[in-house]
Amino acid sequence: MSVQPLLSIRDLAVQYRTRRGPVDAVRGVSFDVEAGSVTALVGESGSGKTTVAQTVIGLLASNGAVTAGSIRLAERTDGLTDLVGLSERRWRHLRGRCIALIPQDPGNSLNPVATIGWSVGEALRIHGWKDAAKIRARVLDLLERVGLDDPEARARQYPHELSGGMRQRVLIAAALALEPELIIADEPTSALDVTVQRTVLDLLDELRAETGTGILFITHDLAVAADRSDRIVVMRGGTVQEAGETAAVLTAPASPYTRTLLADAPSLARVVERTAPVAARAVDTGADAADGAGAAEPRALVEVAHLTQEFRRPGRAPFLAVDDVSFSVARGTTHALVGESGSGKTTTGRAVAGFRAPTTGLVRVGDTDVTALGSGRARRAFHRSTQLVYQNPYASLDPRQSIADILTEPLRNFDIGTRAERADRVAHHLELVSLAPEIAARHPRELSGGQRQRVAIARALIVEPELVVLDEAVSALDVTVQAQILRLLARLQEELGLTYVFISHDLAVVRQISDTVSVLQRGRQVEYGSAQSVFDDPQHPYTKELLAAIPGASLRAPDPHEADPHKADPYKEEVSV
Image 1: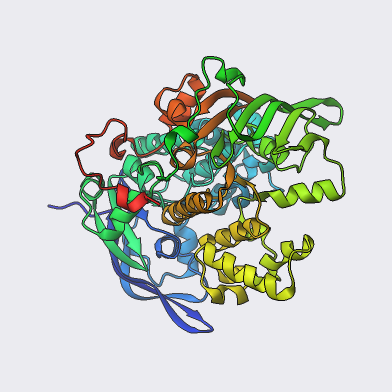
Image 2: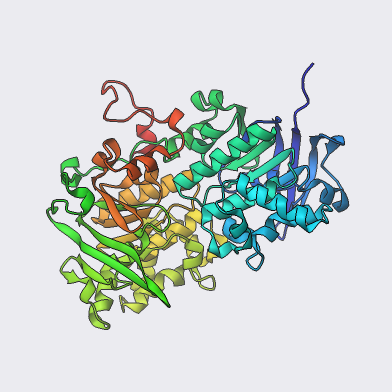
């Protein structure tokens, strides 16, 4: 006799009402989640996976409706419940007690004016717990259970006082408060560093094994799904492309779309190939590289020597954000600054881009001593030759301007060209980043995340810089869009001779695009050298830890240096530029 699945979804269809008419977001979706197991729902933005999750927990937007299908939950106490069409009163009974949600963004999901203890205890109070002492004891037990040190102190703190990984643990604690049968984890680690991601996912695995909770794991990253799920459902355009046991689907995918996702996942893909000779890109830094004393590169465009950055704190000693960092970047190559949040990589990148004068040390770009720049003409000339692309294109693009105005603005600021020449440049740079001409008339809100990031890159390139500093410029993107942007950056580097300083916490992405790498930890450069040497023979324990945390080890493509040269490379065509 077969066992009833914990969650059973059959032929689900969801439609949204919009001003342009109805939109079918989900069509004919069917899958199960078993008790004590993980089913991963994988797909890009717009694939329908979040709509499915919202429908399962009864939080579908007001303009959305289930038009067909069923969702059944096997509750421990009330038996089989059909979740479609439940009253809000019934949903209040189920949420938290039977179904819980771990949302994507811990920064925006916790009440900023409520203590951690109050937030974790909220579900208990909603479901009738009255005894303050019992609530407090349960909250402290949960905080300890998710691995937070000194639970009593953490319970009194506010979200802004905790790191991203700590806040995500708090959200897990809140979801576990009433020991629900089903947890929906919606991209719970996408905003976290790889080592913190691994810690949080390990925690979810441990809690699932202890409690028998089933997990519906929403992710865009097949590598994470490969490591953490028992079954996988691949979605695209609101439909299921492929479903089955994770190992079977990912080792022999039947759907072309699944194969594309596998090829594009940065932790599974090969490096982005470029045509410049390897010898022109390689750097051998020698034994002293970890101390920042690597050999100088020929034709270096960027030189950073003994960079130190302190931040003053009232009543306390200054915070040392960057501590004696040195590296150089050869013209036409990509240097990556890698590290977790708080490692100093963004502070270093902003110093290179001339946005913050360091406390001590030298930054030189071309013939310009960046640390000696004053205000006026010299600084304006430098900012034309050195551009910065931020992590979040939506926040860095003016929502009131059209894309044409956004791209024209830097030309006006630097007094470049006539009105007609500026219009021609805008059209050319939209084409350069593979955007259609009609995009010029749209506003940022009308574009996808990948399109917005292409606009940000076009805006940086339109003044024809030599150096572009990219600060986590692909970390917020789906893996296929991310792969497209990485290929675009590689192509533009070849065509325009650009030099990049590429800031990232993700070593898998860095391996795809970089020639040289600095690994930063708590402000210090612990490793520096060619990308090949850092990845193939890491010297510092922290670098080894970062590499070990890259997901998808069981599906990793063979190292190209170890592959049989006579054997066809199935990845080459899909990731080459």
